[in-house]
Length: 549
Ligand code: GLC
Ligand code: CA
Image (cartoon, rainbow, N blue to C red; front, side, top):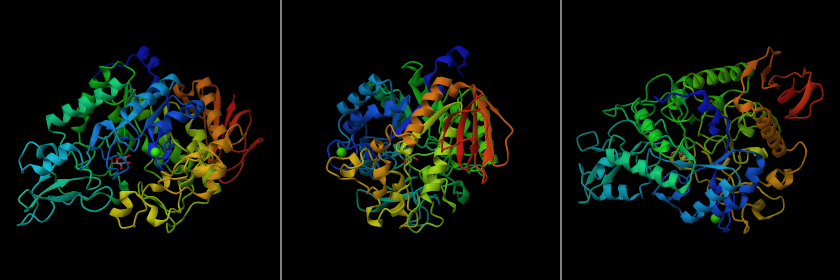
């Protein structure tokens, strides 16, 4: 393991970085086809720099049949025409760098698209061939092989195996897909697969990206023999769970892959980073992904999943700082992304909603929008004061809620189709952003086309409607990021303060943060620096303030 010296830590930009997630389909559409694209992003990057973030992470824009919104990659070294060209990607990176923003690309190594040349070749090759050995092909069970090789289910619902037809027309082998049928899993014990991805990493690092967000970083390695497994229902649909070892998530041997990747990114200097999307519990286990010779960061899903309740929040913050700190990594903090119900809705849900299931018109316990927004602002202001690195998902700085009322026939998430409408899936958090108040598609696209419908109420949530408006969510985020940087909160020490029932409070770098998660107002003293809701001496429920000590 490489030793982490204090001198090096002080200069590592990512340790206290605020990273803004761009979901390209829904950010800004330059050519009017209703789908966001790279030129659209480049044109609007100034607005993101103005927010005060350090970096942007872009969800996949590679060549893809878009069966899982681009997380099904057919060519890892090219841009899908839907999003633009490789030159557009170069221009985007250049523009971002001019604005002082680093760029994190998203890489999807657990599976390819079924349209990838490798998978097409595998389908045309016989069982036992090197082409098939890049994926996980197995014979079926039962006398005629008509039963899948094991009982694993796909994260999106239904079986994790699909049977192919061989060249001679006979029923053939089965291939593994932890996600959609169109996303065959690669076999990461195959050296050719390892070498291919080293090369893909170098391709994008050469192009100038500053690192990678690694998709399903708890997947890739599968337990030998692929034993049957029935997941614990409470584990959430991405599977990582703390009760039983899972034969396809969190396998020990996956860490060898990250050690190898770490050496590849380090060929390009110390500033390029890897961030793990590893849905494993508890946070102490997730911290294994961020040991000094593995990834730099991992998304803190324990924090994202925590209840809006003081004891739970305090515990997850404490445990995260300790767990990541014990391996020399910064903790990260995240409240929303393209896979979960936006926190402006989630924090006011009254019914349980497992990760990835989504909410729709028929869901129980739908959130009251005003309460959701109030809590989201309080949660965000608390998050942005925490030491470590924070992730912001596009639109949360506008206070966007989940779009609950998407008509059934407009839904696109494979989760919706594979569960025959039982789970709404993730479309509600992926709706195109509102930029202007009066323009078609609120400025997302000049023609007014949008790949998912936008709710009518979003006019007053547009960026233009909030820019320069005191008390708007956008201005709250900007002020928080400004103060965070000015006070160096990202690399300060957090010290808890005793607090009244329902209240969470800590000191950090000359500021005192107080969040009231309870039901009664509490008195506060001190000079107000920031507040998530109007506050004069009394801190109302669901409000966070930063005070100068
Ligand atoms: C990750 C992505 C999600 C995708 C899945 C399969 O969890 O965030 O959007 O569907 O991986 O690639
Ligand atoms: Ca477009």
